[in-house]
Length: 178
Image (tube, rainbow, N blue to C red; front, side):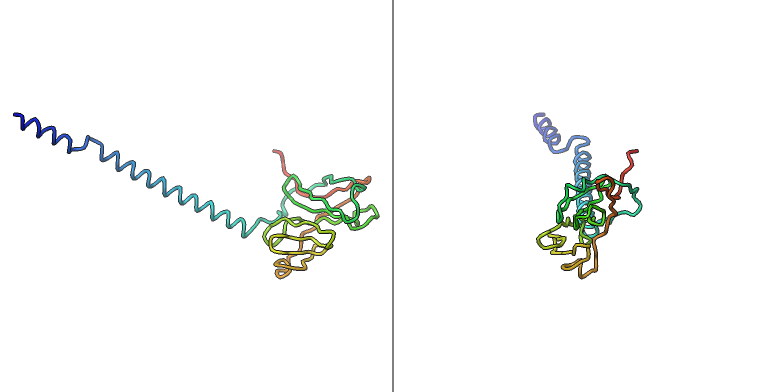
């Protein structure tokens, strides 16, 4: 009788509890599925970042555009520049080239390099716009003079300017609040 009690206890120890294998297999399948989903979504996000880097979005022509105040004309000296960002995200660099006090004295160009979307800035000492990412350079009118933009023939897009009552305005994109 003592042997039969020991045998039944040994059998109980060897047999898993009811539902134990089901639970383990469920957890194994679920964790494997979850890990696979995480890898796919992680690589997908990484791929979307690469695509956005290689093919940056260009300025949309469908945006609502309006006149926006930039600065007082007298606050600019010849050769000075100012970076402007519109409510819609248009980025422009505005440079004063002359001293008459009209919109002909100013030029407003996109500050986004057409090559890969890096930020360009005005170098008054070199009389050019320069993109530090790949050595792209543009003349004062936005025409490419060096680097990948010159090889591709990519100029900086222009913005329209006006002067009213000694105030400088730019026509740039706006965003609806509704």
